[in-house]
Image 1 (cartoon, rainbow, N blue to C red):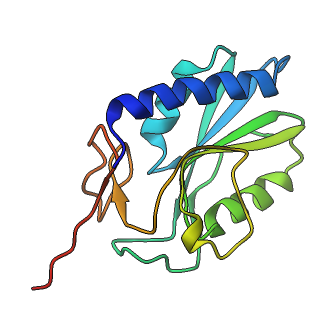
Image 2 (cartoon, rainbow, N blue to C red; image 1 turned 135 degrees about the horizontal axis):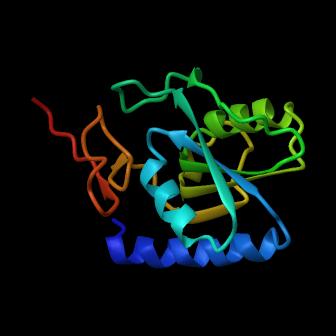
Length: 170
């Protein structure tokens, strides 16, 4: 669906857009949402020409299913105090919008100076919450995707591209 080369070019472009928007930021805190965003976050952090600190949150809304459970669980919270900090949340995909909505509400209540978000993928056809990321890499159709950190039942994260999962009937 999205080749590795296209992803790489878009990550570089997103990094320039983010740098332009948050010019003057002295110490950006990047919050990568585990597990799906770890590859995107690693590439984004390397692409940003800013001083950055990195922390992680692990959330779960899918388990081993292709359907969201509509409930987001915090598995691992931040170690960093974000009060007064510029924070960039890095998400793999905005699907129903529930995860990003809950993360932004939770982190917003902790008093950051600025709270922004970037998502590699946006799937607006499945949106249940009005949340959108400040920056988005690609819009994708309502298909289950894997690759570039995104999985299906923990499989496919290591693919260098974004592909779709094809299901067959048994």
